[in-house]
Amino acid sequence: MPALAQQMREHVLQAAREAAGPKRSMPARIKAMVEAGLTEMGKFQDVLGILQAGLAVSGDAPDWEALSQPFYKVVEDEIRDGMARGAVTDEVDPAVCARLVVNLVGTAAEDCYLFSPPVGLDHYRRQLVGFVLRALAPLTR
Image 1: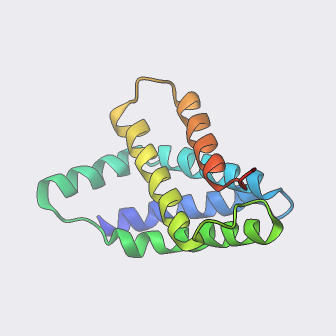
Image 2: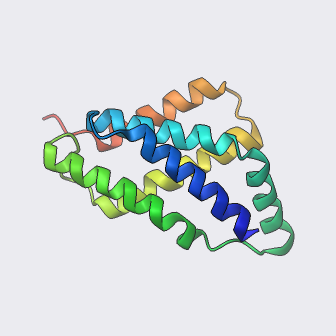
């Protein structure tokens, strides 16, 4: 199972990096990364199911922390860049928020592709992106 998880990680990470693009605004990059990550994970719906089933049956889970580190780093760097440009509130801890964003996208993917939420995928995706962007937005006083 770890090889399947590793393969999925590489594809999702590549899609997120490509979607972000260096010439976009920070909110547009975050939006593109979240959408690309969720979409790419959908291509691995069967792998998500296998990983989930393997965990339930044997307790044998891949090392999610090690698998997630590259995602945490990419998102943390985006948050730090956004903070430097004033596009992200300076009241967040980039490392913690990166973990929250990555784990939220992973949970959303499982919900969408394994458990079928009661709303459509596009609506779910819009809500996820909006939630993340509002959480990182500079505070207005």
